Image 1 (cartoon, helix red, strand yellow):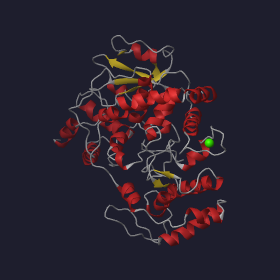
Image 2 (cartoon, rainbow, N blue to C red; image 1 turned 60 degrees about the vertical axis):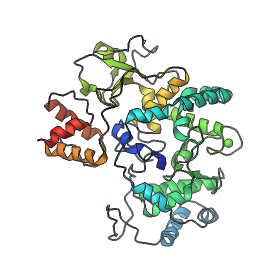
Image 3 (cartoon, helix red, strand yellow; image 1 turned 90 degrees about the vertical axis):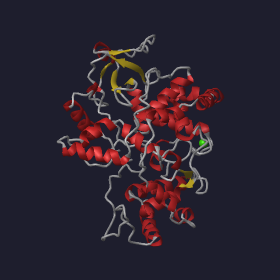
Image 4 (cartoon, rainbow, N blue to C red; image 1 turned 90 degrees about the horizontal axis):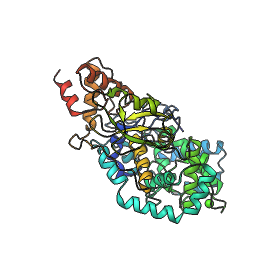
Length: 440
Ligand code: CA
């Protein structure tokens, strides 16, 4: 799987489209080279296979220079060279045509994003917590075996399950072959989609699932774990022993596959994900940077405090931690440890990892945030973020490519502009900063 250079998040359903930019906005760059299900806009590494000047749409997207049938014939040869049997290919592509809804989703760039507190409100709703607690009891035996085999805590497994597919209830309803064929033919990342399509054909050839039952999101994230096909091939597990890795229909297979992925990503059993903290007045907010890690004990010596009545999770004093301010200095603060970074490898968004972590904690009766969210401070819209980036760069604070995605470069530029104004340098994009830059 390709690296996710803009710290993207995987957003797989139309209902989640509005989330995508707030998540991208808050994404913490992980060192991870892979994520289980990267954002459709995360760029593949291979170059786009274009041979001539291609016509473009109004937004600059290149249109295909060949018909779908021509593309399919060409791709069939490529698949056969990758050892896909002709009959497997022909059965999978029987009656397949491009899906306009997939193209619409691939090209959509939502203007407005959802604040992190609203995202968390729905991600860790009382209904989801109760349902997860019920499933922890129902699958207690399976989860105990998974903890033993993979060393991944059961609450984390069920939390990921809840976040990815509402515990298997929402897996997407699109044909994975049709979606990926559409994206390979005319999506924004054709090389990535082609790789996924070959992997999907390998899954069919292996006999794990039939083409009709191979369903997922418009972006090709599949089943209860929302694995993309290459992640499936590297990490899916047949845990119930029927000889098929069925992440669609078998909860034990789905939970084991998630456990296998988290274990391979470095999960450490029993270690806390992190914990909420409070910051002394005058604290240097520029230290809230995913790449700045120090032992918990050092943070505590430098003005980071536990909320009243809270105690330090056992054994965490010597662990490396980074400071996370998901809504800037006015909102709650967290110290995040290694297992938080492991969750980012599943889905590279700090909002997602926070939701998984708090949900897992809430299954055990905790996970309530003490700090208050700045609910009067709505996130910038996409065009405002682009304007902010453009103005930052024009004012000698290089924010990189003005793409509306608040990545490491933009954060650095925001900090510099905040410092120049004597403001708390939390790197968080606000209307206040945008207005100040407009006035210059
Ligand atoms: Ca199975």
